[in-house]
Amino acid sequence: MMNILNDNRALVLGSVAIGAAGLVASGYLLGDGLRRAKAAEREVTVRGVSERDVTANLATWTIQFSHTAADFASAQRSVDQQAKSVRAFLASAGIESADVADSDVSLSREAPSYNDNRPERFTVSRTVQVRTADVMRARRAYSSQADLLRGGVEMTSNSVSYSFTGLNVLKPEMIAEANRNARRSAEQFAKDSGADVGAMKSASQGYFSVGARDGDDCDDCGSGGGSTPFQKVRVVTTIVYDLG
Image (spheres, rainbow, N blue to C red):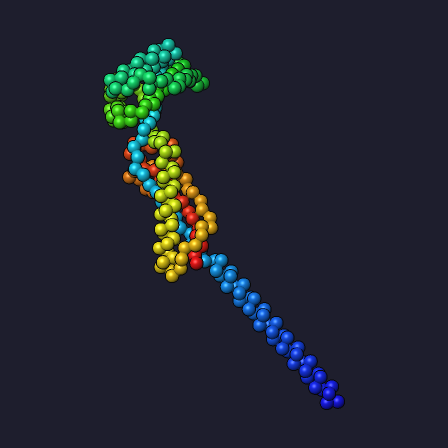
């Protein structure tokens, strides 16, 4: 009987020992897994910015004018005369004739309504567009646009846009600078945290934006031009680094 009891006791103790060892092993594996997961979460996301002040190298000036008359011939004659006045004004401002073109012409007719004794009305509209690389000359001419009104030009729309077309030349250098600035930010963050910057995990290049030099920063602005020739090109890159 004593032998049986001793055997059972040994069996129970052995089972307990095996269970304890299993708990220790599973606890180690769980702790190691949590440690590894925690280490994998040690990363920093930083942004790098690069900016350049530029001057637009293309001016696009659109001048639209019209005249309304009781007959088509009168409206057409007036608009033809206005077109001559516009071209004469641009020539006196030093704009090359090759940079001036008619971009649109249209006719609309307004029939009298019921019980309206007024005659039918004809409106002829025309658009002259200036597209020049002589940006500052165009800017000076635009500032004198009141002379067009004094010359009898019935302007219905008048706008100028300045564009910078040398973006592709700047892109490689600016992207490299933005990446360097992002790396410096990561290194400073790591230094403050008592860590080291590891490998790059992911990166994304933001859009290049071209806006007014004195305007607000805008990461998602377009690059189609602006109302001033003095502009700022900006790009932002976002990079994720491992932290050791």
